[in-house]
Length: 87
Image (tube, rainbow, N blue to C red; front, top):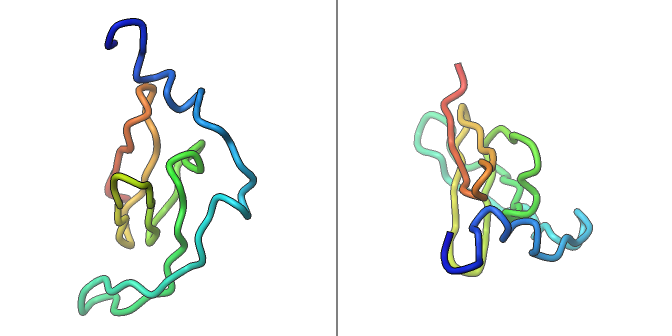
């Protein structure tokens, strides 16, 4: 919490746009010699309402998160993006 602002409230107050409008076009991303160049979907943080499996890219004005194959990404209660290795 900073002043009266709670970081967990940021995701709630950010405007939600339609899936089509929020996503950028998929792009090619290189995931090393094992996976090579893959067509990779691009999401925004607001799309992380449920876990998503990689490969994917989360793109925001201030950061880019690359989720490789074999990993998943979700958003915690504070709005932080959490990566986890799939078993």
